[in-house]
Length: 195
Ligand SMILES: [Zn+2]
Image (tube, rainbow, N blue to C red):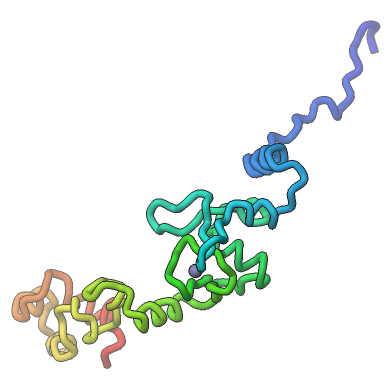
């Protein structure tokens, strides 16, 4: 080793990891809130003066639900955090529903966990969704779907014509179908549930 060479410790060559933004946000939030616990911070943003407890923090522009950070720092809905803090973990895939229909409400008594279909049924029962809304008519398979132009009979006719050797293009023309439709039907890419 020649004189004057500098010994570099291998450790100093390592680049220190860049803090993730979640870490930075947590640090900023700690600085802002000092020693307040997560639940204290959460409930400090809630107006409990009325029957419904209204989230005063950020609000999702499109959905109208309150936006909050969960205990792990992840962005979620305020009423889900309220549920988590008071009733425990939310089952995987479950929604937290409002019994009061106030989307900014985080009152635990007004929250239930349930599946999306339960939520829709609830909504239908209360008849909150305006009539004619797409939410009242979730897409359904086949003939019950009002948007579908084809009937079961046409599907069967297509299959019968195809097995009689009539080309798909000709079937489309004869039945007035969109080009390629009979091919999709015979290849069972669509309407496969019809026997
Ligand atoms: Zn409520």
